[in-house]
Length: 253
Image (tube, rainbow, N blue to C red; front, side):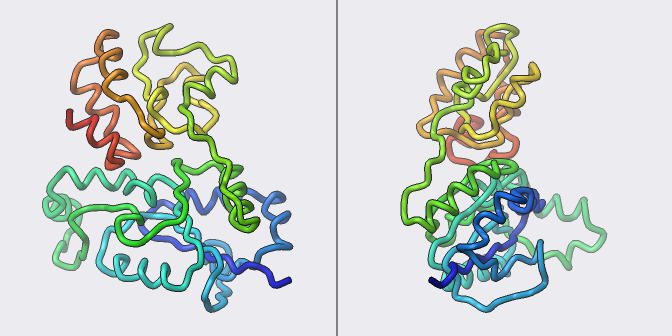
């Protein structure tokens, strides 16, 4: 039986999600009998030409070159998985979407005339059809292995759809918002991190983006009761997944 050809592509990102794939180590070796990693420049300079059975894409679209390149990737890919906040929501670089990117360029670069960039940082799904989005900043490596394995087996990936609050309950963590009044995005954030921040008395920062059907209005009302000002709520949503529709709408309210 021929092995599935897998390609890993980088667009505008920090490489953290690709490193999460490499961090799978022995678990990744278990899949080695079923896949050939044909393109993965983070790991090897060896390149096998497409088409590819599965493409894994990290990063957002921030320039014209990448806006064209993602169509080339889509055309030579069977299934396309986007991984991480950048690829699924535009990433922290999507904060530019709410500001004057031309002014940013003038301030940061000595010769801004040489910089070619788009007005917005956008997720991959804004440009091409995507078969599965895996959220996180960075992603959960166990979830990534589950998604790859599911695609190879021809079944639906079993990835959690509930909120971070459920993970807090599973590990017996006292709710930081109830106990201390700490601002926390846990009730509206997709699970996957294992509720790390609340376990250390920190509020959730929304690294995994909005959960399915988040009720941000109810959370905002409770945070206001706890003493949060409007500017606090605004900043809470404007982080790793600022351009995710649910968080964008919540911050604009």
